[in-house]
Length: 180
Image 1 (cartoon, rainbow, N blue to C red):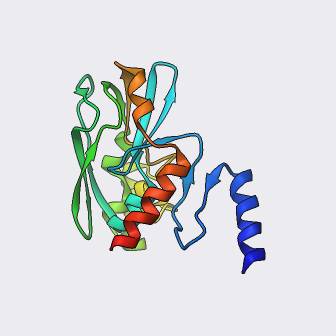
Image 2 (tube, rainbow, N blue to C red):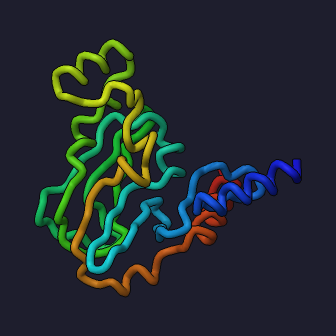
């Protein structure tokens, strides 16, 4: 068992992800910041991209709908700007930093995650020119890449200092899961 964990740790380090030792299995990328409400943010200059974490999507289950904000809308750190609806629940999406929405991931509103049968995917792929090989919602299958939710122009870059790094977020999730 120890040899497997050592191997997993080396692979995780190479892939820039963080893993915990006691059963925490969610992917946590090292170059992102994390909010306690399970949103991630990647800051690039005065722009930030964010979405929900792998841990959040794992607990939500299959995501069937993502409510996206309008372009130009102001978002404030810690406040809701949208929602994620899954087969289990609907959850608010909170902004990890403040800024003005400059881009939304429109693919999420057309995501084939809204249907569950393979044949329905083929129909949607044909009608909407969607990739029918992606059999799950982008939020579920690629929360840190294709499943990003919005991009904002930052109004206060210092707010990111209030967020957790990957190690703190992994520990936070592990402790949270232990309570349930």
